[in-house]
Length: 115
Image (cartoon, rainbow, N blue to C red):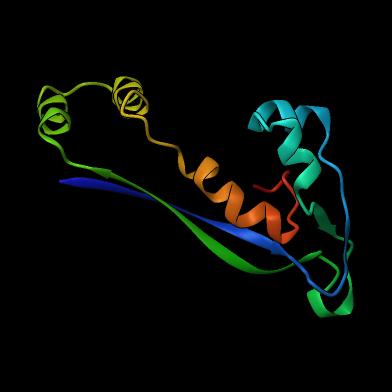
């Protein structure tokens, strides 16, 4: 038994992408370090005919796999609620899919608000 979570993340249009600096709220929400903010190639799509004015073109799949270890199977069998399962998963030194996808997405110049 295992759980697979997936998210499709929109990518900025490469033709109309412009530089962007994360806001204070985005930095706090994503727990970005100053090094991440300074070294990232942050950007956002402005909108052009190629992306039909949306600023986005293409998508990126971000996945998270929770393996069915004996502890996990026991928790499911005991009908542990979702919040408790998530705490159990976090205690296993794993990262949620949004955090796993951040390095894949942001260095390529993506905007955080739609992440």
